[in-house]
Length: 426
Picture (cartoon, rainbow, N blue to C red):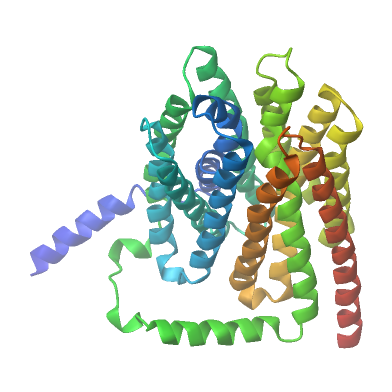
């Protein structure tokens, strides 16, 4: 028995030796994970959409539904993530990252039915929703307080890295004669190493822990616990939370028109420029990488709420640019502002809402992500409905800008409400 125990401890030590604990490396792995599950899992669709529509003879309406089904999957994924207990965070992250990689590679299968496309894009959305929330939870809690702000920006920069990579990969493979199917396969192959790296940052406890059947609760008990937690999280904060969630839903609705159809708009309008859509999408990715450091520095000076209001106004202006300015200037301006603002708006909103009641930060972040996903689901459907037979996206951009301005007003009222609550407490 002692010999068996010795062998087991030796094995555990050898396995523990490959656990990565360096904070900078963990941040880079988190960035890679975000690039895979968000940059590829969600936004590679945008980069390849013009080619998908041509190769499969898809209408704008079908393209809009394929986008929206992915976003409703994101909604479901956020809902799942809210119920994941902390002890299972890493295990569920690994599982759904595997699903993300597989669903990316599956789009290489030829002659798939449209229904199968819907299923794959739905699963991909679920994987993105779960993995985005759980990777952020796992990675950010590994950082020391002193370095958390800087390293969190590195982690979230993965969204911009993934968008940039999706543009470069798509441009390269289209240039040498391949199409969307090979692009998705290569993206999946590029994603595979993230699984080993996520294994290397697993919590040490997972090496020796075993499932405890006594910790397994019934669905009914889980529901009761969730309802109690929700009540406690919102106690005394229901109005400001409602204002912020509604504004965040409008933020999801506002940005998604460009985030889904910008390369298609570029292909329509810049017919003399080869790969205009991918160049513009690359601009989105580059500016998305810059977003968090810029707005994080501003938020330290003026606060997250004022920064969020500025970002919302700027994004609304960006949505109007392709309407007010014809040609490349309007589209590239929209791309720059989209990249600069949407990641920053996510970061600011999630920081604000988790600080409302830090004890229930995961629950509040989950609620916010659900609201954002609802806006993203509705956005493409409204856009294609307004586009009409001529596929004119101006009406969709205008409605998006109006939605963002309404969201700005709601954030202002949120700011006033929270100020009143603070004065009451004082």
